[in-house]
Figure 1 (cartoon, one colour):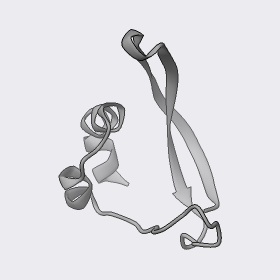
Figure 2 (figure 1 turned 60 degrees about the vertical axis):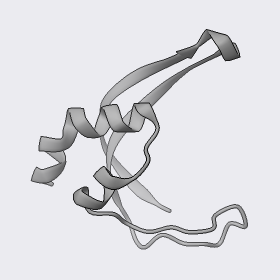
Figure 3 (figure 1 turned 90 degrees about the vertical axis):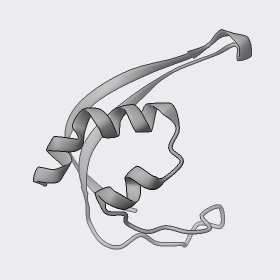
Figure 4 (figure 1 turned 30 degrees about the horizontal axis):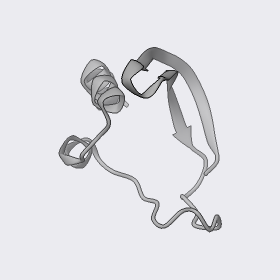
Length: 77
């Protein structure tokens, strides 16, 4: 999927010493430049969600954090 990045929103560290895992996740505001494509064999499904649908998904902690932090800004877009 091609996108145009508009700005960096924030970042969050994910640290799990039990699994010897540490990563930094960056969250960007971006807009799509077309429809999602299933050309890659690894992609089984691709689609857009509205804010109500996203809130019902089983999101990883960092995605849930970003959604809650930027929900008001997402509604303005």
